[in-house]
Image 1 (cartoon, rainbow, N blue to C red):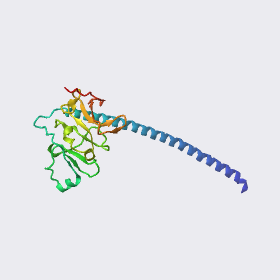
Image 2 (image 1 turned 180 degrees about the vertical axis):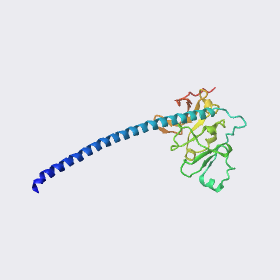
Image 3 (image 1 turned 90 degrees about the vertical axis):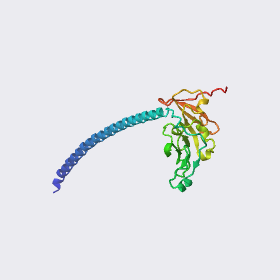
Image 4 (image 1 turned 45 degrees about the vertical axis):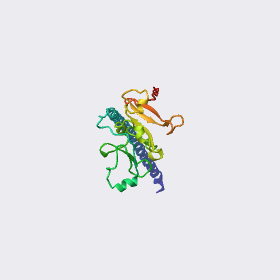
Length: 231
């Protein structure tokens, strides 16, 4: 019996080598599969990047078209008055039980009772408006009076000047060319105009220092026009 042990050991070694060869071949096969998977993941990433690029280009094109439409001056009949705006808090709105007849164009309504996050502007036909521009003030920071409101006014800033910042959280105004504030500056036509209080030096908002920026609709480039001299 002991005489067969070497042969048995040799047989086992052969079988082990055979298994090792199978494992090696499977490892090579697995590596090929993993490489193929990596190539698929890279291809997926490239496709997603192309899709996102196309999506962003489409969104940018749509935004440019929206901004161009907002350059169209409303008729005198469509214009609204510049009388002071009112802020309606969340609880007052709840008490109204859906009756919005007391709202006037440009009023601010609080729809969520969570800081300024739920603030919306009363637009045409009782619609609620917020800015749709991508390069506007971060909503986390504060509120922007949207062009959908200001294009129907002649002096947007004055409409909200009665509101304390702590209540309104207004940090910027999107303004049309004919707005009183815009006309205080030497601006170019067919631009978007933003009256804002961002302090570039200290990287914060300073509600005591407002200025106008004109924004190229096609490129998004911002420039600061000079103020007109008082005659």
